[in-house]
Image 1 (cartoon, rainbow, N blue to C red):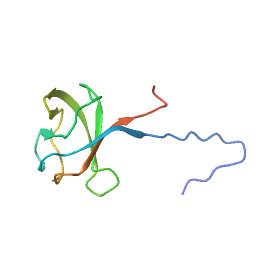
Image 2 (image 1 turned 120 degrees about the horizontal axis):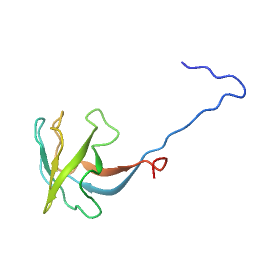
Image 3 (image 1 turned 30 degrees about the vertical axis):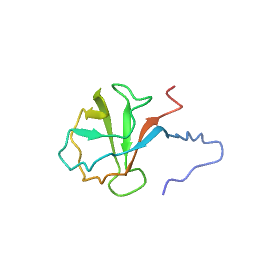
Length: 95
């Protein structure tokens, strides 16, 4: 555990999810594409968080979007079931 002294400065960092949607179909580990119910607000180079808050959570960057199919810049590490949450990660400290 980190200890702090009086007068130390601490920087907290918050990340938020926007443009939340769900996986339309199952996506397996090793897949480079995911199908979503909505791609509204999403664009190339956006960072997505897939299945947030659980052990199989992972983030991936969008390479391209065609219809409702999103191609990622790196393959998935975990299997994901249809209906799992997907959202765009926004860091207000960087905006």
